Length: 416
Image (cartoon, rainbow, N blue to C red; front, side, top):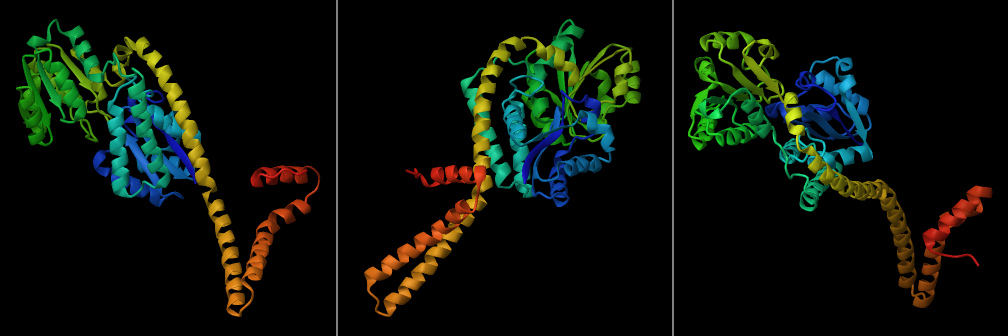
């Protein structure tokens, strides 16, 4: 079996493609089971966020795995091939380390991805698709990420998605203190955004979520109001800023609804940030005159500001990762030869037992113990050295010289 990582991310594909291959949290375990049932390998973990969808697996058939990804989402393989990357063995290990350390993120040095990766591993554990290789990979991955955070300043001066959204909003409105803000969703990303916007003391905060209890818990933290998703049409016209990030497979806000809302608002502008993948707001909404709609990809330019300081820390992190990759590949190489080592030991054990049983029979007959031990030791030595001696004596030319050098190293002997 071989380690592979394949998928798409914000560097290889726009959000319009990423949303087509995203996995929803509630169906992730079943997707993992479906994957391993159709592969030669039985190990897999899926990381699916707004910026990436990646599958880490242990398989002999990587192309078959790519076919599964397309088929699972009812896509033609040719539609996603230009955006896919396939990373084998050492490249897969390095990629996992870089992702967990925030080096492969849209926000260089961000920490949220580490939590998302840990959640992906927990899901794979529950599904029973995390075997020896992936378990070792991810444990080492988390260790490397901790080392990078401890020994470098990769997270210093990092501009988050939430902070970038606030900066953009401040370009639209003279002051956020006069604006009503609506958050759709109640997950970690919305919590981060709510914290950043609340720090600007907006006029009013509303939180809408499928489960109103979760919305209420978040709203109370910021002295806001909680509503259900069904109440959105009633409340939307009052909102100046809308930030959404849910796990809905279909858009929550369509063009028709927003058009009606704009008429009610008498075409006062609306600032909207869609952080979901798949998108919560129909792309056509961005074509409306009085709407400023941004997706996760649109925030990249704001996030790039101040990146130079983090690039120095990133270079230091890359050195740490390179060393850790070498160490992990050494572990994989040792693991690869374990069956051979086990076979050698089993063969030696069979020889030992055979000679021991023969010696015990001789002792039971009353033979001299010293003579029996001498015979046993000589026979065992001959058996253990027969195979290498036979191989060396039946080779010629370069093959013979290579075998001779190998045996000298193996047994630590030097011919006089």
